[in-house]
Image (cartoon, one colour):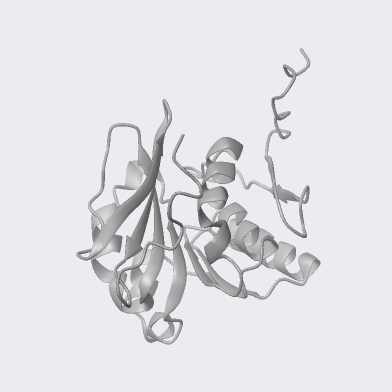
Length: 209
């Protein structure tokens, strides 16, 4: 059945597409890995509308990168660099191939995200301006990851957290909810650090749906 007018056609199974910016339409393979669940087009489009003013020149950290849909989307839309952390060997190899194909300013780290966050390599990666936290829902890693993230983040960083519908992982102290979107499967939440003066620079430009 063709899609209804005004709706986005679904990507083929095992593929997601970058939906905006210089690499718009680029297909990214989704590895057959337990727990890998790419953020939906609807949620990604909303998230990057929220982040639009913050993306140019931003330094990005994509934990649990999977297909790279979040980190590479950020680069496509103007972020200056990204670190993509992925534990699965096959998914990490696919990420490296996509980074090379696109000529992206990104570094792929094949490591367990929580262990990497405690490493000297992670300490040298900050401060970052935007962090994506979208772990496998069954792993229950939100609290452990969010406890150790603050030293890597700029004081006014943006923090995206995706979790199962009905759940609300607590952000690090000092990070406050900026926007959220709830679907039947997930809660997508964007937080902001106080930074210098705590200005909310996205303001009302992109109101939550």
